[in-house]
Each structure stands twice: as structure tokens, then as C-alpha cells.
Amino acid sequence: MAAKAWFKNRLNDHYLLKSRADAYRSRAAYKLEEIDQKYRLIKPGQKILDLGAAPGSWSQYALRKAKGKARIIAIDLLEISPIEGVTIIQGDIRDPENQKQILELAPKGLDLILSDMAPDTTGVHHADTENSAQLVHLALDMAEKLLKPGGAFVAKVFEGSEYKELLDRTRKLFGFAKSFNPKASLNRSRELFLVAQNFKQKKP
Ligand SMILES: C[S@@+](CC[C@H](N)C(=O)[O-])C[C@H]1O[C@@H](n2cnc3c(N)ncnc32)[C@H](O)[C@@H]1O
Image 1 (spheres, rainbow, N blue to C red):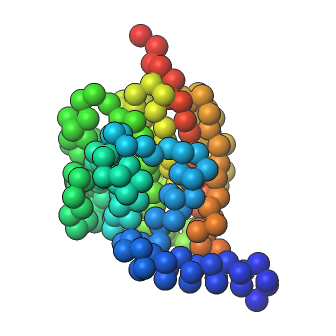
Image 2 (image 1 turned 60 degrees about the horizontal axis):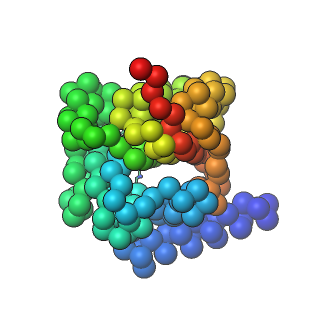
Image 3 (image 1 turned 30 degrees about the horizontal axis):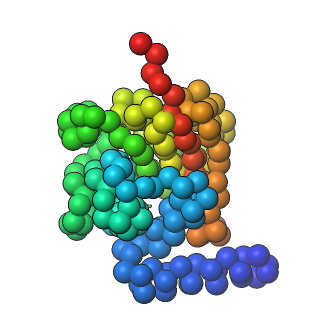
């Protein structure tokens, strides 16, 4: 095994063991932790939307970082066991009824949208990256409807030919947008995270 792959695998074991010790529902928490440590996104008092939230470790991390003082709406196709302080919706974010419910839960807007959504993979690279890009476009649609000026956005993307268009769209909506590749991502995965800050004021 190449040295880099060996090192990444050891790191993965490390994150798995650490998530058990830290009582996180998944090792994915450490990806958000790395992103947050670099970009300082999560603060007490925020209203946050967590898309693709099951089993719940991003919501857990966000709540801990906000010292229990964030209000979080979490949605996933899968059931999420209750987390105090988190409003959970079980359903598909592509369903307009679920989008409407989220709009109603955040009448004054959101400070931060997180999306760790991942489509079921087909094994066909182009299909997987296209499905992932569609989910990110949906998360950006939600950002356009719900983010307060100055708000922030994080979304997982499977890297592919659609990425440039996603980055271009994000750059139009935000003052700052970059790609980030956390150490906690699995070695074999081709995921990266789009991180954006300073959502621009909507034109009247
Ligand atoms: C990597 S997991 C999320 C892990 C989560 N961030 C955590 O820390 O526990 C990706 C999730 O995206 C969800 N997902 C994929 N497509 C979705 C959709 N259209 N609507 C809602 N959730 C979706 C999947 O059900 C899956 O649970």
C-alpha cells in the first residue's frame, strides 16, 4: 500500500475511535469541525439548516460549538433520533412540501446552511457527480430563499465536470467561495466541500 493511502487509513481509524469517545453519531462530525476551525462559521445564537443530516453528527457538532444556543432545522430521507434543540424533518429536500415547511420554520431567515447530502452512488462516475451537483444546486436554491445577508454555506460535492458551474454560481451569490478537502474525508472518496461566506444582499 502506498504510504499516503496507509496514512489516510490510519487517520480514518483514528476518527472512528474518536467519534465514539466524543459521543458523535458519525465520524463526519470531524469534517465539519475542520471546516469550522478554518472558516469560523458557527457561533451562538445562529439559526442553521442541516441538509442530509442523518444520523446527526453535524447537528451535534454545531450545537456543541454554539454552546447549545443555536436553533437547528435538520432534514434527511432517513430517520434521525431526537436531538435536543434540533427540529427534525424526515423527508426529501426535493419535495416542495418539505421546502415549504423549512421556509415556515425560518420566517426571519438563516445564518448558515450546511449540506452533507450525498446521493446513492451508482458506480457510474458521471451519474454520481451529476446527482451530487443537483443536490448542491438545491441547497443553493434554499440559500437564495433563506439566507440572511452575510450568511454562510457549506456543501459536500462529488468532484466532477459539474463542479466549475457550481463554484461559479456560488461565487455570484457570496462574497467568498472556496473548495476545502478535509483530512477526515475517506481516502477513496472524491468528495470536497464548497465553503462560502458573506451571502450578498438580494437585489430588490
Ligand atoms: C453522509 S450522510 C450525512 C451525515 C451527517 N452529516 C452526519 O454528520 O451525521 C448523507 C445523507 O444525505 C441524505 N440525503 C441524500 N439525498 C437527500 C435528499 N434528497 N433529501 C434529504 N436527505 C438526503 C442521505 O439520506 C444521507 O443520510
